[in-house]
Each structure stands twice: as structure tokens, then as C-alpha cells.
Amino acid sequence: MDWSYVSDHWSQIMERAWQHTILAGVPLVLGLLIALPLGWLAARVRWLKPPLLGGSGLLYTIPSLALFVVMPVVLGTSIIARVNVIVAMTIYTLALLVRTVADALEAVPNAATQAATAMGYAPARRFLAVDLPLATPVIASGLRVAAVSNVSIVSVASLIGVSNLGIYLTSGYDRQYWTEIWIGLVSCILLAIVFDVIIQVVTRLLTPWQKARVA
Figure 1 (cartoon, rainbow, N blue to C red):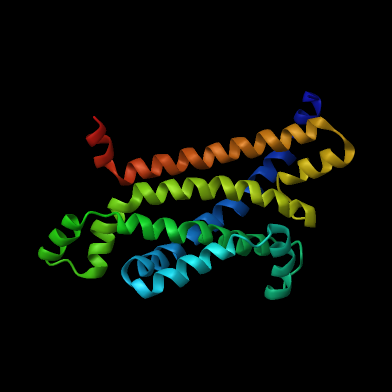
Figure 2: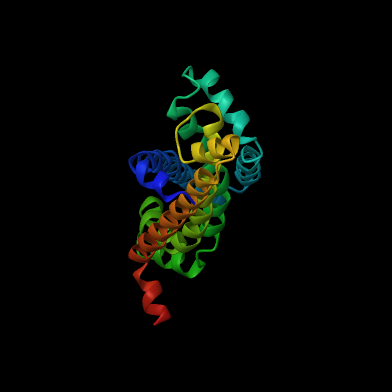
């Protein structure tokens, strides 16, 4: 490991780490926001469940590099525009989370939903105040998987020239320079861990009763 390379390029490493964070993190939020209503529909409207879960599952089978190349044609953007990666990664996040959200909402105890209905909760209010909070731990588990997946797949975008930590992997491989390869690998792993920790912390803040039950 050439530590002088790390110190000389520290600002560049941080810049690419931030770019990687945006490319992986923004789709995570967008995918969750879209998956919530779709998952709710899948859980509540039985005839919609097969097409929603099947269709979203098929999205994840699209090769990432092919999707990154197709996005500029669909969106009318430059092939190295970050929006292409953000849209593509949102699709992948959505593919992972729709089923998770549906399963999480279906796992909410009937007693809790019936009690909320008996108390006069309208469907929208019950979803936000009862169903979603109780489903949060399961949804968070799926979100953690999606976060790790996003960090990994975003690296592929470096092959088409989009700046992120994957640049160190491709450049290091081309030059047979292991310092760059290790920078790319370690940085991606650390970023995935940061995402995972943030999701766990937010989940604990949103579900304080979980901590009380464990105690």
C-alpha cells in the first residue's frame, strides 16, 4: 500500500467518496418513497400484488451496465451525466423494496389495525400512525440490503466515465496498481458500513418501543 499516494490524493478521494454517496444515497431515498405506496397497494389490493411484485422483481434482472448506457437515450442526457445513474439506481432500489414494503405491511398484527380503525383512524392516518411505524423494522432491513447493493452497483458506472470510487478499481486494474484497487475496495466497504449504521440509528429513533421491549 502506497500511503504517499493516499495523502497526495486525499482531497480527490474525499470528492469521489462524496460523489459515490450521492449516487448511492439519493436513489435509496427516492426508491423508498416510491416503494411505500406501491408496497401498500400490493398489500391491500390482492389482484395488484402479482403484477407489482413480479414487475418490480424483473427490474432487478436488468444488467447495470446496460441500464447505465440506455438511460442517456431515454432521458436525453450525456452518457456521463449523474442523473442517469441516479435514475437507474432508483429503479434497482425500487425493485428491492416493493416486496419488502408489502411483506412488512402484511406482517402488521390485525389486532393493531383493528384497534386503530375502532378508534376512528381513517385509512391514511392509520397507515402513517400505526401500519408504517410497526412495519418500519422490516422495511429498514430491506433498506440496509438495498444500501449495500447500491454502493456496489454504483461502482460499475465508472466504466462509462461517471466519477465515483469505482474509478480507483478500474484505473488500478488497468495499471495493475494495487494501491488504487485497495482504496476503491476499502472506501466502498466503509461507505456501505456508514449507510448501514445511519439506517440502524434512524430506525431506532423511529421505533423507540423496540428498545424498550428488548430491555
